[in-house]
Amino acid sequence: MKITFFSTKPYDKEFFDKVNQDFNFELEYFETHLGPHILNVIEHSDAVCAFVNDTLNAEVLESLSKKGVKYIALRCAGFNNVDLEAAKRLGMRVCRVPAYSPEAVAEHAMAMILTLNRKTHKAYNRVREQNFSLNGLMGFNLYQKTIGVIGTGNIGAAFAKIAKGFGTKILAYDVAESQELKGLGIEYVSLDKLLSESDIISLHCPLMEATHHLINKDSISKMKENVMLINTSRGGLVDTKAVIDGLKSKHIGYLGIDVYEQEEKLFFRDLSHTIIEDDTIQRLMSFPNVLVTAHQAFFTEEALHQIATSTLSSLSHFDKNETFENLNAVLV
Ligand code: NAD
Image 1 (cartoon, rainbow, N blue to C red):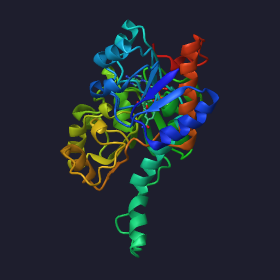
Image 2: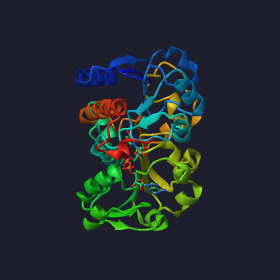
Image 3: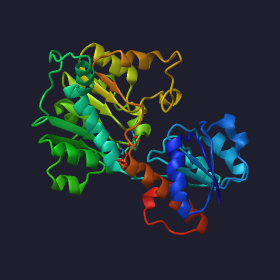
Image 4: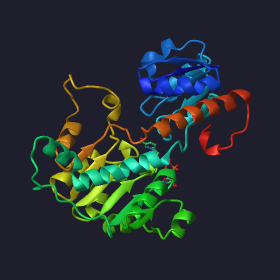
């Protein structure tokens, strides 16, 4: 089987080449994003392996199908960038990596909280400049604070367990409640209650119609003054303009984002020598209480190994028409 990869970076190639020693597929790598502009490079491929910012709308899927591509493998958990209805109609199979390392993302969310709170990024630079003053570095104890977790699937549950270890009270909101988390003393509440009682809110639900701009002017107005908002899920969950207004009015006291609505034009690239035309991200980065990381929450050795293993296993299952042990990996 020949698999064509898009949006590949050196680390993808390293992990996939290593894991492929057990599969012996033909792997072809392109650095560019997948979209209508690049379809001409695909020749004799059985499968396309795509990432979070690749475009897999009906137009792209139809062209891929005409070229003989039968399988789409997403090397990520989210699948908001794929038109699953179109894939079904075209008889294509689509898989994803549902839970490669929930802890990787959950730990990054906690890292963002600790950085924003204790300002270790500022302290690091200060001390290197021989400035040993503490002015402006004061944080707050997480102990006994209330953390709201929106979406308690694999990542939200891992995050709630980590947060619980800090002695916090956890409020959870999800359309499906986890008995395991309830058993750990985590309380499910309405979204409004979570918004109004949490000192820190962390987003872990998928991006879909129902969750698009879940954080907007109205939901921000229900939050506590000086709330900390963390988004490691998908940029589209947050109305960025409303969040900027919340930061300007000081209603939002801290913002940590690993994802951004317009990230496909920015993230995963070195743009240090270019002029950034996106004024919204520039405004966000100008706040001293905003921390932006470029979709790196998943980026651990363990996660990359698991992503490569799961993706190639799923494609092998498709090819041999085998049943999947983890049905969550199959989208179509
Ligand atoms: P999951 O499917 O295990 O969990 C998602 C949870 O959200 C489920 O419990 C589901 O019931 C809940 N949910 C669905 N609709 C909801 C709604 N309207 N309101 C509240 N909750 C709702 O997924 P996961 O593995 O935990 O991943 C969560 C998200 O994290 C993914 O969709 C993806 O977008 C994002 N993610 C980000 C990174 C990163 O590197 N930043 C990496 C992996 C995943």
